[in-house]
Image (tube, rainbow, N blue to C red; front, side, top):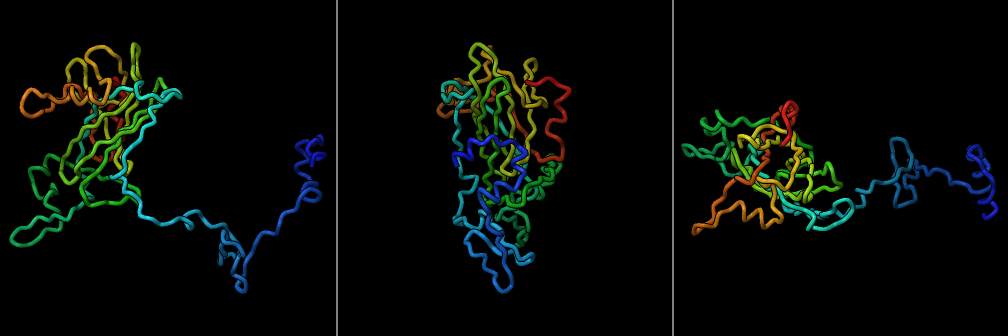
Length: 290
């Protein structure tokens, strides 16, 4: 082989029969037949439509154990920016999520009238005209393997992708999707702007991969309007982030009374998941981002 390695071969030599004739040979392609349907290997099976042996897929060798439902999994972020992992290099944004109940779900808690159970659950907006007039759920699409767990618990994921830094993160808010309208809060890590500016894109989606629509707070009016979800964060007032997760909790809740109460002054971006058949950013292109 040493002589073979040091030969002055060129690309054209690779097309010749020299290697398969003088260096190595290949076994015949395995076949099968009605008389001999066994391919002779655990890793092959006989395709009886063509009578050829084909490699088995990896799924055929999996141990089919019960997997943890996606709603029970937590998230481990790497806290890595530009190749360096350090939690202290990150700060937290408070993000609020509103979710309209998908019309495709039905829970085993049925409305009963005149002794007869309804085919839909008691939380469905279809039982209450006053809600049906206000809340118009869309037509949510999903992949066929998505499982409905029946508990009412759903996750809305918030993903961040750095626009002027190499780093991503993922968090989620937990929603009770039994209700016609639900809301939740989560705290999302992004790069600490320090004395500069952090530019980052936030994207929200449910466990079925369906996107939610972003709305950003206007600095002049304090009202929320459709936006792209791309935000620029700096250290000027009003501060849009907390240095730690604890800072976000303490700034959101007031503890002046015997019980805490929440306030939304520190929220600068919200997401609305109403499953409408519209491009989530249709209304944002003519407006400035946050």
